[in-house]
Amino acid sequence: MAKILMIIAPSDFRDAEYFNPKKVFEENEFEITTASKVVGKITGADGGVAESTIKTAEVNVADFDVVVFVGGPGMIALVDDAEFRKLADEFYKAGKLTTAICVAPAILANAGILQGKKATGWSGIAETLKTSGAIYGAKPIEIDGKIITADGPTSVKIFGEKIVQYLLGKT
Image (cartoon, rainbow, N blue to C red; front, side, top):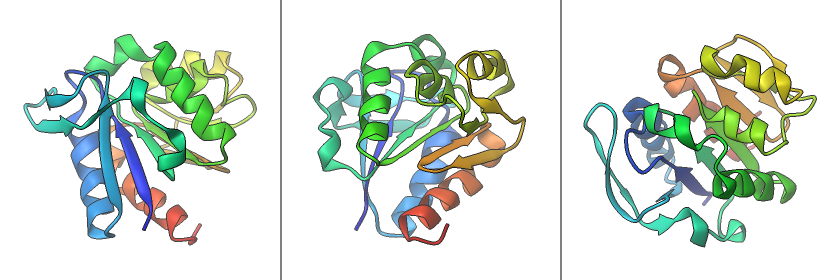
């Protein structure tokens, strides 16, 4: 059973980008852990409540198969966060699936792992992706090796499904 780490902002994560992929993961019986800068109940931008059970500073990459960085208004201020960049870099260097949606692909860009990789995200981070050396496509989803990025709430279902397909060896 795959172990998925979902990382959300300590407030105002994008509800659909968290809950919809999480539902797809649960339907496939994957083990899901939610992490943030804080532990406890976290309210999304649309009022949904998620439970962070581990601080991002305490994550051991070896315990998980994939990381999912969730976007939203609260993540905008954290796209250059040292902890988040470190986690993205460690997952990628460990050869693990590294994924992000909406504003969160900027974390991967700022971690330096999108150089020469196809990537997408919210249009507001297009320049960040291009400047980092990513091959930016204004597409709903991009898959390049062990990196999956998506543009935002309209792509949550396919984002979750592509992660599941990858984990089941179907991509």
